[in-house]
Each structure stands twice: as C-alpha cells, then as structure tokens.
Amino acid sequence: MKKGTLILLFVVIGLGIVSIVLMRKPWSNSTRSSEMFAVKDTSKVTRVFLADKAGSSLLLQRNSDNTWNANKSVLVDHTKINLLLTTLHDLQMKIPVAASMHNTAMAILGSSGIKCEVYAGDEIVKVIYIGSETPDKEGTFMILEGEDQPYIVQQPGFIGFLTPRFSTDEIKWRSKLIFNVAKKDIEEITITYPNAPQESFVLNAKVAQQQGFIQDIKGNLVRTDTLKTNLLLNAFEQLYAEGFYDEKVFTKAERDSVFAQPAFVKIQLRLSNGELQQLSLFEKPIGEKTKDRYDENNVERSIDPEKFFAKVGEQDLAASVQEFAFRRILKKKSDLQLP
Image (cartoon, rainbow, N blue to C red; front, side, top):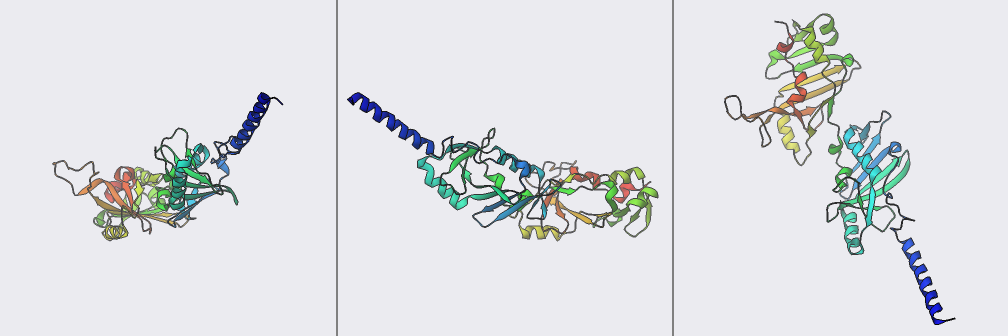
C-alpha cells in the first residue's frame, strides 16, 4: 500500500473515531435534545413536589375543577401555578456547563438546589434539580436526576433566572382570594365596628330582600334601602388581598401585637350551606410607602387611609388589604338605612 494511501486511511479512521466520540457527548442532538428538561404536556400534570436542601418541601396538587392546592389544604394562586406550568413547558437547554464550571455548578446544585418532581397521575414524568443563576444572570443551573452533566437552562423570551418559580415557601403560593361568594349563596352578613357599635348590623338575606329590614347591634329592626342592601349582597365576589406577609417581613410577635388590638371592622359571612367565612381588618400605621400621608389640612396622618392589616378566619397569617378593593363591603348601618 502506498504511503499516501495509508495516511489517508488513518485520517478517515481517525475522523470516524472522533465522530463517534462527539456523537456520544451529552450535548449531541442524537442523544440530548434542547427540550430535555421540558414537560411538554402540562395538561396531564397532576402534582408537583418541591423540596430544598434546608428541609422545606411543598406539594402542589391539581383538583378536579382545575384549581390547585398546596399541601392539600391551601388554595393556590392560579397565576403562580400557571407560571410554573408554563415554565416547565418552555424549559430549554442552552448549553452544557463548561468543564471549568462543572465543579462549581455541581456544588451549587448539591448545596442549595431545589428538587422538582413532576407527576402525571402516579407516574413521575420528570425529576429536575434547579440551582442558582449563572454568572451572566441569564440562565439557571439545572441537572436531571441520574445525570452527571449539569446544563444552563433558560426560558425563551425571558431574561433572568428561574429558581424563584420553584419556591418551597407555602405562603408564596397562597391564593390572595378572600371572598368569592355569589348573592344566592349568602344567608347572613354580620358587620361589626368594635369602636363604633352603633354602626354595626346584621343583614339576613331573605329578610332584607323580602321585607326591607336589617338588625342593629341591639336586635332592633332598621328599615333599609333595598337597592343598597342588594348591592352589598352582590359585593362578595372576586375580592382579593394585596398579599400575605411572610415570617421574615412580619413576625409572629408583630402579628400577635396587631391582632390583639380592637379590629377596625369584623365581617362575618354565613352561607346557605352553613359555612362561616370571616375577615377582620386592622388599622395600619403610615409607612414609607404610604401615598396619602397628609390630610386636607396638610397634617401628617398616623393611620394609612388606603390599606389595612387583615386576618382571614382563624389563620395565623397577616395580609395586606387595599381599602379601594374592599370599599364596596365596608358598609355601616347608616349607609344602608333609610333617612
């Protein structure tokens, strides 16, 4: 065999070996798709389990009406769960983590990664470990369970890191919906003003609509404007809090201090099925973010006129409620009675 032919043969063999090696690399399109992290049919996802290295965990479960619960009891904010499902659907592998960053990425995933188990029924669809942001803050370190190659993952159209969307903190998932009750389902409304008892009242839906009366705090009948009582009965749908405070922002001691004070108003809703829903609003001192800081005489207020602290039922949580959003149910006896 001629020397030139022999050299050419070695080159061909060498290129073949290199091609085989490259094809076996984890980033090869033949074995690793850019969508390897994605869950493409999120309509079949029935639950998502999240756990972090600090020992916190969260179970998100889909209900038959397509709402979601956190840890089997807390209604989930639909915008948050939709964002998570959209993120899972869109996850795209950008590039494998470079060899120079491999150990760093694995250390991050091992020390602070969040485990995300995605289920369809009882079957695990995907198990992903989510790490922190990349140095350029445009991607997120991730790795699939059973793999030893971490990747930089992104969501097309979004610049930033995705870790916050996989939070194990229950309060971040909690729905802000406070009341969502149709008029036909209301049996009785009790609104109490501890510091102004003369403005407290009880509105029985049937009596108010058929006879035009409510009761004052002493049980006396008060003739009312039926248009106004009907507006109140229709006002308990789609009422949302601004948000819930977590322990870092509003400690239990601070909550207890607020809730130990007389409420500005207590609202109790008794439904026709016997269910009782309650909300207590407490005055909130002005703060750095208070917009309407001064009254009509240009005197600085002590109480924020636009927001309240709120306690929902017997939950040991504090929420922030906007006066504007709840104005339609913050009625007094004098607002409803006829002159």
